[in-house]
Length: 259
Image 1 (cartoon, helix red, strand yellow):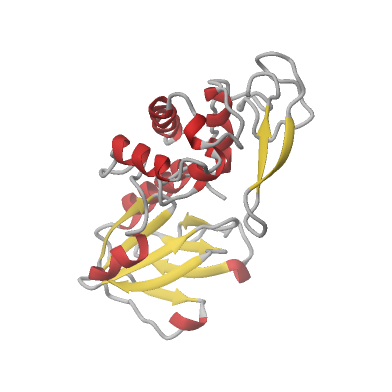
Image 2: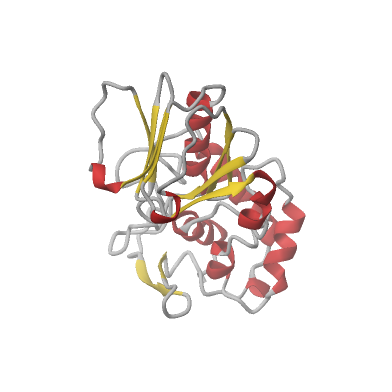
């Protein structure tokens, strides 16, 4: 699933390409919106909230989308060839200069403008948003002190924007196992500050790195590196499943650097 910095970058690209233009064709390829017609409406902007995207159209509508695991928004010129199969397209918005195509989107819904908070109001402080509040994020994490820190970081109700990659890397950088209860994380404020710094540093990059190195195989400390040696101590990285049945995520850790 894309991380919050990827979604932020997607919002920036869509905002730059579409804002101020009128839609010349709208095509919703999901049953509940199949008859919706937005032709002639002005695009007023696109913003991200955690991993959610809000595209404001006309005076009354907001297109709410979520990439989930496989989704992506692409921007094409009229003459460009699409880079994914046409049957994966869920939304097509055409303007005089651009065609925005949402592929394999996990959520597609058209909201009344004043209903945006019903879709994203449950989210915690957005690491890359104007509403970022470190103290509130820490308070929410501590609310369930017995919960494993890995699960708590992934819960978008605590703070919005962290996915599996950053969760694993943050645990490594903080020297704790993903299964460590929140109450036993020594400096939760520092972990949250580090999360903010990582997303800020990567939001302008196409290659995410938590080590500072963008060379293949060295971008991350533990994520995706099971059976490889730890880049800090040389111990073999281990992997397992974290979370309740049905919602488990893959965890990576160094048994020497994390306790």
